[in-house]
Image (cartoon, rainbow, N blue to C red):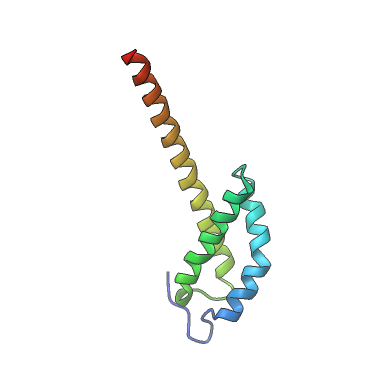
Length: 100
């Protein structure tokens, strides 16, 4: 990702405004992937925090799509973690049955 010119760099006021504007939409978007509203909100909050950490590379225009991509990636990682946990639980219960 290329750095934006210093005149376009995302400042706190712009970030706060964009956060307020896009947060509800992104939560609804994340909630379409996960069934738990709190999890959807966590994904969005973590996505905005990651974007803030990269603010030197972002502008007001590039922040919303950047956060949206992070929300999607957060969902993918969450799903992978859930699949892995279910597999571990299955293996553990199968192993316990075999020991009996």
